[in-house]
Image (cartoon, rainbow, N blue to C red; front, side):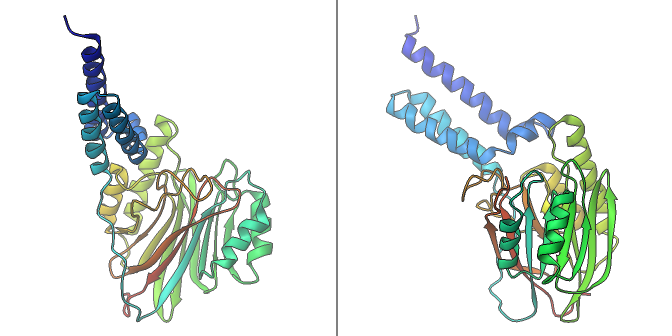
Length: 310
């Protein structure tokens, strides 16, 4: 008869093996997508379980948990554009923040945006109160603006020091998207700020994926140098994100350490906010920034422009 200690060890081993394999190889469906969004925290948890099991002398549990940590963390390593070491040529600083619509720390968040010194500021979850506060606080420094307040976290805004040569708001399968064209040192640039639908239900999951597909079709219609920034409500190892990059030719700049949600002080768990850039552009720096009162950390990116963006 199997000893109780060995039985528990094998039972834990089986459970961990099933979880790890499912996390790594489950199909591209709604529930696996939700679980895989937390791949890195789960990998760290498995690593801790491995250490604890080894201390408790559950040998097979320890080995399986360690195997699971390696297997799951490996899924999160995705191609990312390396930082440019070039200092010559024009560049643009972009600051992005999801302010959390119920958040009322207007002045502090706006100060953070102003302190960034960015050329362009992207703001998401802009309700009517936020729209008024942003116009009052930013328009003196950023006179060119497109502000679309909305309910249910759908409001969006874009502020720029550079005049728009064209700006418009598009409906992206139920949510507004701002597309702006402007020139930086005679270089034409297109910037699109996007707040994709949060996949909190299966219907929202389908809507978010449809938004990626629709936006991809729009982006490939022009070869202008392009920056896409926003809370995309996906992680870089999500198949929908990878399909979007593949279809558009946009490069992900999101390294593993760039986690933005949920924000707890200086920490966050998963990377939901992103900066993507087209070929010819390069990234000089990308950091996360505390946004007072928000559940997201902001992003501050310096993007190097080509001398001939056309």
